[in-house]
Length: 234
Image (tube, rainbow, N blue to C red; front, side, top):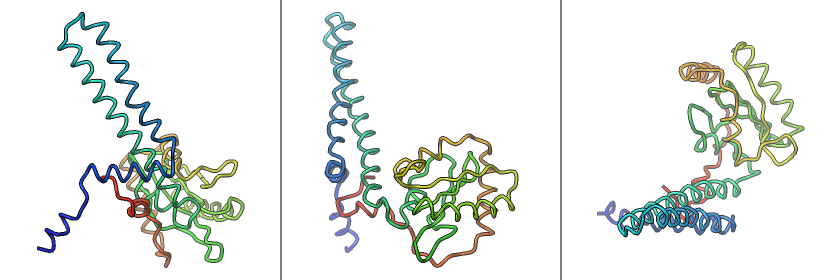
């Protein structure tokens, strides 16, 4: 009975999408105009094509217009998803554990990342995270770029001793020159030049995890939880 009640209280799909849209619009006002443009553009194009190619056939015109509406709705959902993710990350940007949140829920493809840092400064809360993918090993600094540079170099030496033939790249998340903004971190990882196969990615990740000692550090912030108060998009 309790389970039935909780199921009844859970918001429906459309209500969840509306809540996500409201949250996104609050943090990113331009999102609604991009969504409107994304919907209207294919509709206008298909109407023009329908008038040009249908030769007065009403059924053909209707099919063209329906196709345009469906394409517009698809673009709206794509734009909403990307803008909602960016808005969610903007809420945790600059907080300790934000990089871990991206590595936990924002990675795509064959990339493997841990929400727990591999190195941390207890005084400044600067941290270094690690991701492994087709581009090799990427060490990601969170905190002041000047302070985390030494931490990144130390971790680079450790990884290179264990995996001398695997390419290693260093990144710093932030808003300064040479840094990568939080919401662009996943894209930056995907742009790395591929040098490993998928089986090698898993082998490298397992090798590094087996050598990494556990650290008593709180888990990273989950961006899905950060926007749970206004609803979650599934």
